[in-house]
Image (cartoon, rainbow, N blue to C red; front, side):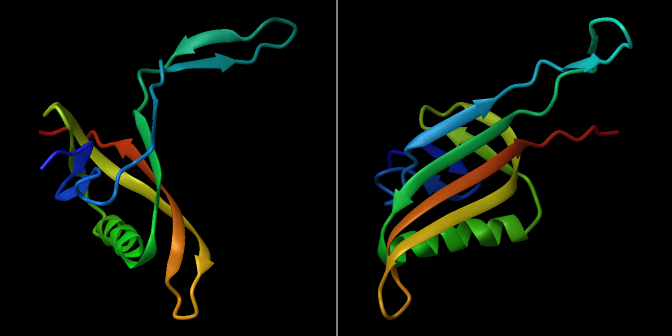
Amino acid sequence: MRQQMALGEFVFGLAADFPYERLERKTSGGWVDLDIIYSKPLSHQTGQGLEELRLSGKAQYEAGMQAVERLRGMANQRKPYTLVDGVGRVWGRWRIDAVNEQQTRVLDDGTATWLEWTLELREFVNATG
């Protein structure tokens, strides 16, 4: 099965009926500014920060709602997951920081006919030893 990305056992893609439309990636260079009285701030290197990813997309009906609930269940496990892209590149381990959804056009049984979702991930790095 083709996929855009897999987070643990959760697959994003058209074949999985849950593709993402947008991927935002943030990499920090580790710089901070230290304010100095009567002078420009000094730049200080604190070390590279953790990378952040934000995946977002749209889904429909019960299938989309169930997929978002699966992501919420993964977040509730409070553990990191391995992230692998569609060409097999391993991005390392990532933690789920937030699962957001906005339901619109909700039917009388509570099923959203249109659902916009966002998944916020942060790189998981722990020293061993």
